[in-house]
Image (cartoon, rainbow over all chains, first blue to last red; front, side):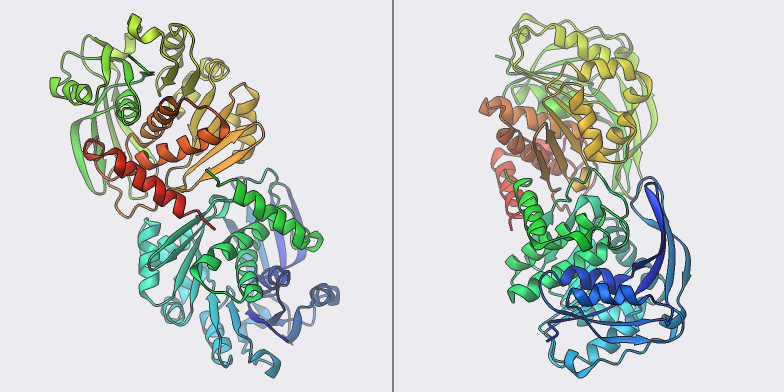
Length: 299
Length: 299
């Protein structure tokens, strides 16, 4: 049974950071999110891959009990080439080849349509909408985005924000989308569009969760070895919704815990390239880091 | 009796932010720090002012039971002119007139020399050293600095870091001083120089406290109305050492609480120009904000 429908990209990434580089590595928002969510519940991916997408990547996902029936195969795979400078805060995109993603029109398998949790990962808001419309009766819809869609599909994006329960974006995107440097202001404006909660991801500075009445601040884990931050935002989102699906509790109190679980997985992901750190990760590792995150904010 | 000796600048500031401007407003690291510390204990200021320094500013400090015997008067007062752009993260210095500060050679009154707590506020490290040498038997020495001294007096600064117990700096300065973007690395390098604790101030993102074995992360208060961040770092430092002097407890556990009290006062200070918010602030206001900071990190 599919607990969480996760739509997003499946990519072959060329990534260079000050600590090394990889070529045609497994990546994409749906991959990072689904892998992270799979520590807690059963995700079903909705995505398109090319005929050139390596079979062993699918096996890797399959071994984590990630449902792949919603993955369509056609044409050539989506490719992304990016580079991180010394400060590692933001990827510079060198090249994007949409390929099969350009004409992606998702059709959900019947086994996905009754899922209660939906993660609309970072991709075209019109694809996010199409997926959401095919889910019969969702309990919680979490939606992510990125600066590209703010610049190029702002109207569709704003419409989608109205349809989700939890909206995720990073600090730079929040400032861009709502035209303010003040993150508390930006969060108020986002909440006014309809979501119950807005989460602003701040990379090494942690994450902020805003609801109508409350505010939660989760500190970032003080990593001493960051190799590649690619996918950390997607890992955060996948871990977040995975924890909620596992516990079946969408109270504000439990959203806070889910933010911390998401942060923990994201911090691990930055320790190595592609999914290399996640594939050696266990639930006890995650629990241990959550307890460190708990201890480090105690006073 | 002087509980805390505080050395730093006393300035007349011209400040422009997107939300207004002030001219010849009361400022300077010793002023913000001493005013903040005075909510908890009796600070004694060490500073130099000019003959043109307005008497009513001294009365303002005096009414908060701040000792002023360590303030020398000569020549023309120190003046700073700065501007904040829309992002409010860092002041751009337009003009600095050192005036009487250029030849400042502090001599501490006898009543200061037995103080147990010392705050070496942001100014020339050779003045910081001179003050510290005049204190008989300090229990805790907290030292602040800024990028100017990292660029211009790095050797003296490094020497002073070895003599303090708690070293404060902001994130940009930490990266600059230790040649790394990784704040956890920078903190390790700072601790290796000798201090028991290193605090990295991150503005709206809060503050990190590193000791040899532990790490504490305090979230920033989500201010919706920031008018002028001038002096926030000094307020943090003054509130931090004030709380420690009041409680007489320098354990790691209590350092964490002191960080939160410092953060609370700094967040109030940003709400208005000069000392305008601090002068209407009460200890219950501070306690209330500390309880908000406690609630917002609970999970």
